[in-house]
Image 1 (cartoon, rainbow, N blue to C red):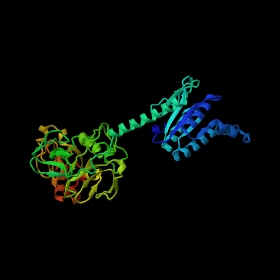
Image 2: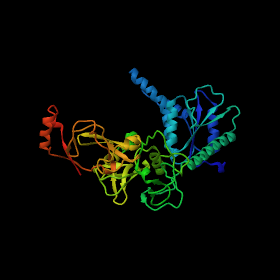
Image 3: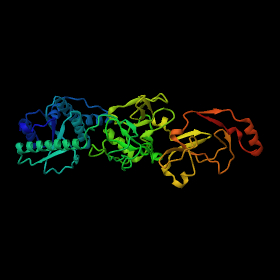
Image 4: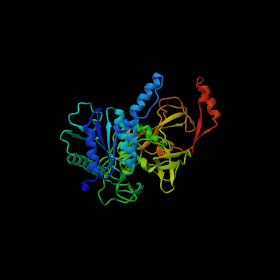
Length: 440
């Protein structure tokens, strides 16, 4: 049997019942055959019974004492077995297995000892199974016709099958072949080869962003800078230190056979497909464009935000040229306060094209493209960009490109002449709420 020796230690639990004689014989034969320690719960129970323990007078204490004495032999068996497993020895234990508590203890022992658990039971067993799970390996035997060679062969075949399944799973979920973050750079050169955009899956033409080190991720310029579902971006993706990646739907990368949270490319691709946050972000706070980063938790990626000066982890926007890192919520807030109103972060793709054609960006005065990110407030205000406007339907706040959004908004003194004018025309307005803002 040497060629079938498992790579990890195993713990064989022989399911016994009070008064059972056959299990003792089976456990002895198994331990002798595979040459490993045998720990019998009944032996420990008999030894403890020889020790005189005073009986307390209180009924509550008596009940607790009885529960302790019932579980103590099993606890001793578990501790001795763990010591043997830590020494990389296989272990045979003969125990009373009759409830979930004991089963959970065995599973805990399996994990702590980095071993494989096998439970042996009789085929004619009429007792309820507490371990009807595909994870637990089970071997059924006939006690009357027990053949130790056949049972050990079944055990090793089960262990060998588990090892092959693990190998197959590792082939499906393997470490990504790309050993780098995908720093995207803007390419202005015309394309001579046919490459599909990883966002829209259409042929790349015109300006594009591509990885500086590989051809795994290439995007149309507008696709990389847009995020069509930004309004539904989950809150945990905006946290300074997210604790989980709870995507409702996931997308695998080209390397993995299925999605893995341990793969940077899978996480990156999933955000791209959802369109929650833009892959490339232009913002007036920084002179260069920023790359979106979403790291597997196993890498413990941490940084200090250059805006709020607080620590962040796992998710950020990054400038590779300047080593500039910021929280998502700091550089791309979902709402911002300006001109006395809340401006919400939206995607122009959520508006009808006919409606977009009515507006230009209120800062750069350029046309609003269908896929661009905007801050937009559709509520009306009185004072707009330092000029007095009336409370009419024609004077709604205009959309502003995210890339044009002022990085600093400061309050200035109110124009006194304007106030006097408004007092004359609109005596009932609350002037204390009016403010003029200077945009930088």
